Image (cartoon, rainbow, N blue to C red):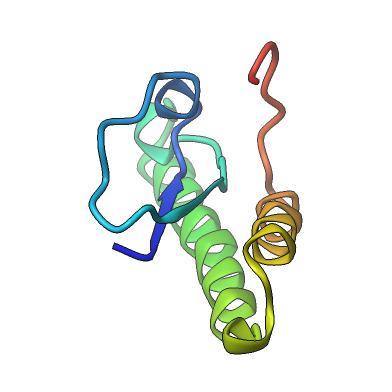
Length: 94
């Protein structure tokens, strides 16, 4: 594996399992749309919004000049992408 992204805040705070290939990892947290309570329209809106946030981040990721970035620069860029609109705020995450 080359990249590992977490989107659930609970997973971001856990020790990651061994990933073959020493992948670059980043947390791209968004609110869990499955946790939304309310009408069917409100639930659907939460999933549409989550999809929009993830699609935007994936688009930013695929536009990166990955071949020309060293690992530290790439990690920083991935963290910046994870902080885009819709990012959750993690507490006590190291």
